[in-house]
Image (tube, rainbow, N blue to C red; front, top):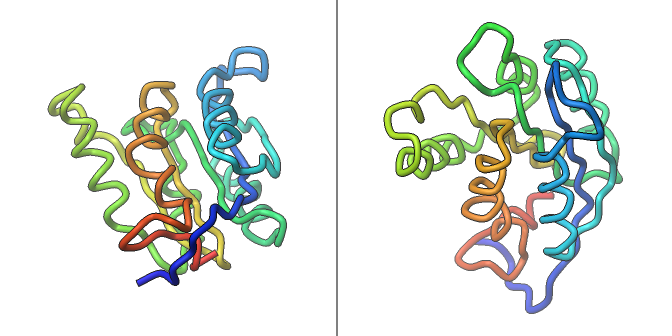
Length: 168
């Protein structure tokens, strides 16, 4: 069980959008995540856009994991079930511990909206070097679902019975 905190602890969060077609001007999912995390009281540590290239994704996320100024990495895009989507292969090998329930719960919540297509989601999360990495699909709706239903409360030290803040 997490230590009991009575006040909010702002975290430093990096946002990575993985896409071969998005630009900074039309990155609505990245924009949503930045807005949501700052509205929740957290700080944007860094933001980047990266093509769906296994090694570039792995390098960018690895840099943030090694950076003591980043406690959480939110990745959006690149988690689908087609050949171009490489986020799970790029990022999963970096985890010291996988948060098994993250992908399971994301697919369960997605099922209500997209039915059986939810099984093709490869959303995942894990801990590496005291950094939480959460990987979501690239649609703004999926990012909203993941943030509001799974991530936001787990980044709040006041959430009971447990949260991720004490692990970061």
